[in-house]
Image (tube, rainbow, N blue to C red):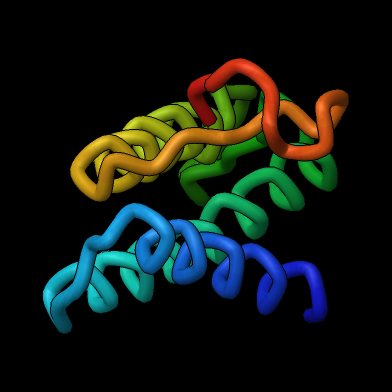
Length: 105
């Protein structure tokens, strides 16, 4: 859980460094972190069940279909990026000690 706390702290620190203040923005960080939890659960589901999942309708029909977690993961990632964009936050390159060229998350 330390990783989650580190990410949230880093995002809040970036808001402060950028001079972005307000409860609305801090609430968006909480929304981002909720999506981060969902993203990790979706990834775990894809790793566990794979990209195709078995289905059976109980009437003797069965087969395989795509894992819905894949599409949901894409939507979740897109929403997370929108929140970061709304907050004006970008990832910093760690190769340069956080002082490198901006790189989108």
